[in-house]
Image (tube, helix red, strand yellow):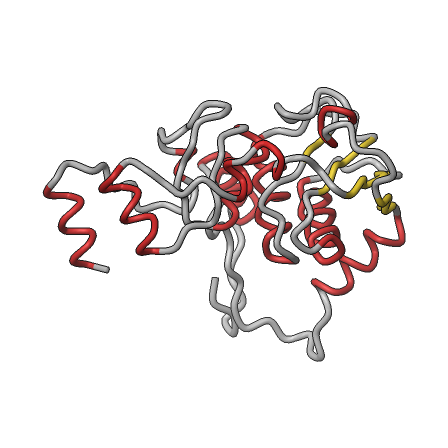
Length: 225
């Protein structure tokens, strides 16, 4: 790995060293072909930016960096980018944690299929979209999703589905949110040994919120933060 990093630096490749390259200047345009590795960033690239990438490995992304080319398959092809499962969202996804919960739950339901979220009315900000991307890949294998009326390739349900009919419909309501929450917050003990915040997707805005929550407080002596 270090040999690759050293070589890329020598030939002038910009080394961002981040899991969220779109936060530090690498923002591809809709339709642009990329070769990204980090899974939550891949979901963000495909779904939010409308650019195109598969989950690349260390060596394949290195080859793309050197040659400027990447294999034409998967998310680079139009026919693979359409949604295959409709998610009927029955509740408001308002809080930041709601976006993590819906992403995590649906990730465990759809497998490799791209979900199409319907009935989300309020346009989410970047932290909420990042949360959905991270949770969708952690809970399953979502590298592409559509939010009808919000994400670039989903102005309508028909556009998001490629006009396909008879798609499977899953609902996401209070019960599904509760299932996701309880699964993520289940423990056999109330003791907390370590709290990890931010990796890989806390920007300065989120760090400001976290700092405000901790201001004037002390960490329990038995807990690492």
